[in-house]
Length: 159
Image 1 (cartoon, rainbow, N blue to C red):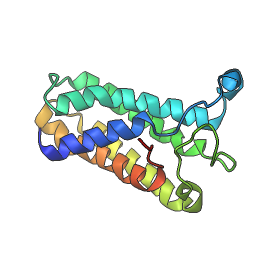
Image 2 (image 1 turned 120 degrees about the vertical axis):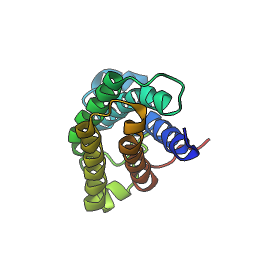
Image 3 (image 1 turned 90 degrees about the vertical axis):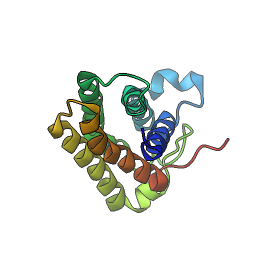
């Protein structure tokens, strides 16, 4: 796999692994489950988990599996349809969120970034790649949209 795809994949996995923070107080665990900050964190954890097999295929660490790719794309698609709703006013801070203030300051830009992600996912789903060579040109743009969104709308974790 090219260095380009390796870098994009690593960025996408690393960013989604910590996309939106988690609970800071275990006592709040029972009440935080319906908090949008918790919901968006859990959603991005699912996206991260779905990206792993795709990354392994793109890097040549796993055999190409069209069904696994389509299952991952479905996870991305489902997430892209609800993720933007999980950033209401009042959830800018707390719970160790890594959501950048730019989400609320530039809501149109954030919504466009999510629309770009969804469009890239839909294009890949419509292509129904049956082999790795067909998947690379439609999956690469998905990871690019992830990186572009994270670069602007996510606070990098220190460390």
